[in-house]
Length: 193
Image 1 (tube, rainbow, N blue to C red):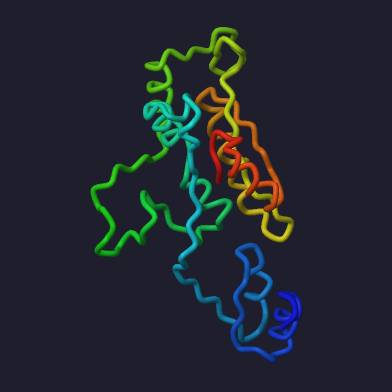
Image 2: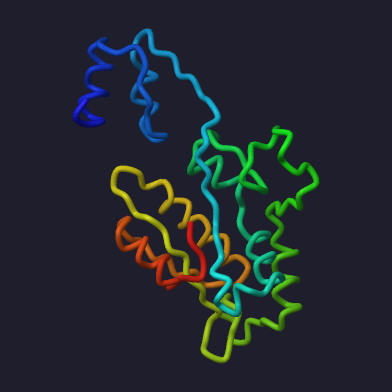
């Protein structure tokens, strides 16, 4: 097929028996008579990576605070529509290679705030953000913004709201794939999704 749209059109006409869909389009096909949805575990892996060349991100305690601050369950339920699984490592959770004792960073605002406090961050002006000598504690998250697949940008917005709860201002850098690759190559980010 020359395009995804032509493939999906052929499926709707009954010319195809199976068609892969994007997460946000599955409901379009569930309503068709005789169509059954089949979920399966894919090899796709979405994660937050840190730029360890930035001193703030090289601090393990700071990274742990971020990990505790992000509500992955909300992202899985609301962005990925419960069609994703949380993981602590880039392996399927039930394989013999996975580490069952890997540290889990479940959403814990109290723990996140405690870690940030131990690092000396305080909200000195009452605006809800922790302060540095240069103003609010601000970090960046680079993310691919594709019109056809806005899922990562939606997840980034959830992360921004989560980090605001623990006093961190997140600047989302939404870019097309070409610009994103250049940002990563130049290491012009604090985190990437």
